[in-house]
Length: 290
Image 1: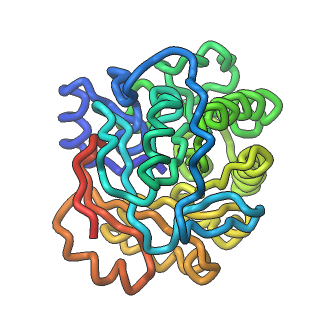
Image 2: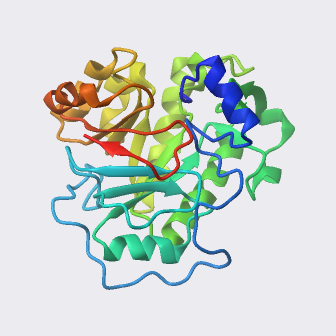
Image 3: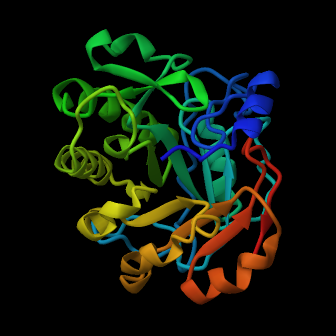
């Protein structure tokens, strides 16, 4: 699910002109990378960070349980943050950025939206009107997708993941993969969502990328074997963190962020085996890790 925005916070973001995808994902000014143009060849001298863990799909890198992470989807990309994993935008992040992070010992996760259409994306014109649903609450430049139309959507997602591979990313975060519990404009069912999410995960693994399950808490038991780690927003605020036991019990990382309050949740997060931090809702570089 998208970050659950209080109405006042949503209004402030809109007034600031920084509406962002998934709790801050739309790089509205497209400034999250250090350069543009064709990707440069990634360095061949990088090896996966020690202790990165092997996803169940094979020997691909995946975040370590309890490891540190940074999630930045807007603002000038700060490559100097000390973190085991970086989660950054697939389109605005360059191959040179990824290479820099690799040289610093960080694994790099490729953010893209698999369940919503974003009007600012370079491939936005590839989505026919027939698959575009209602506007996401709080994000006026995004619309839910009809995930039943895998014949249309999966080739687009495959192309996006090919971009991730070309830039040297290690993993992928497909966002907005819970349209069936939202007002999408389509009669989506739980089975529709499971089928789509499994297909998206297979696209990633087929390309040598580990893959994160973003939110979609209710379907974790059915999906944990298909995903290599999880990313969660505000499970402390909504008393949902126990839902991630299938991931932690399987030795898979859960990367967790809260947007409000203080770091008082860190002891509970550590007990549950989560990798947690506090960030502003715009998902710029600032962070307070546990």
